[in-house]
Image (tube, rainbow, N blue to C red; front, side, top):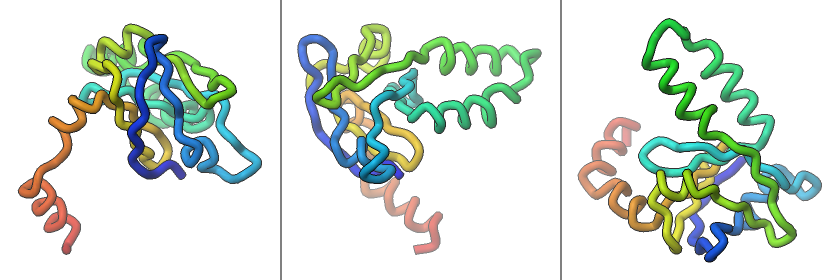
Length: 145
């Protein structure tokens, strides 16, 4: 399971290191060496292990009715923007230019582990997005705390 918040940097070649804790999230003998990345929601980049991506596509996307223009747009956004990224020996992936532009990534990034996916954010975009005290209080209430 992916979890945690990490603060790596994007280098001049568009590479970002996936933290070791995330690469080893599925046990010592199953280090991740390939991710599928695509446009994320709220201007981030989402990254999935191959099997989690396949599950997401098969159970969420392919069942959407193609007669609905909104569904066609959703599929184009997620599948059309997807690419396979192999991690190099230092555990880095290259974020393609179109995804860097979409997510407004410059140098400082935030990586979040979110159970079955990883999100990569521009630090500035995520800091604007991060919930404040009022939103967190409402969330706590919604959860019954």
